[in-house]
Image (cartoon, rainbow, N blue to C red; front, side, top):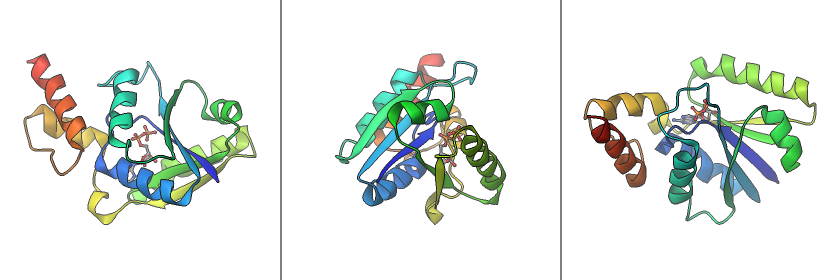
Length: 160
Ligand code: ADP
């Protein structure tokens, strides 16, 4: 089975990587699709987010990193892949994720969304929290892979 794991990945954390690794084990092919949304104020450019994801998934031979803009349902049609993977951390994720899954299915009935429960260790982890900690010089070693840690340091040090 082939699936798409869509998201902003601004930047990728160990929480994302855990979902990618577990999904890749179950799927023949996993497309990690980075959303290029200029109206979302991203810290990392689309190329930087893609580069970091490629770096941290290079040990996974059936994982492809791609990007899309616009509607996920249009991207699904272009890629001829209608299985979506999304991660669920806490109940707080549920409402938004459910809404997205239903909207996507109403746009294209072929689309199915598969939810994967976050690992306990990463249930509190989000890209926003990691950016907030990095911004104030806190340690993010346990939250993101080394390449992402370095990129965050560079971003915030470069801004000082
Ligand atoms: P989006 O802006 O589309 O929510 P994110 O990059 O924040 O993009 O998240 C992409 C997906 O990864 C979402 O399904 C989100 O719930 C999931 N996710 C984010 N952080 C974690 C985590 N720590 N553990 C499990 N899933 C996560």
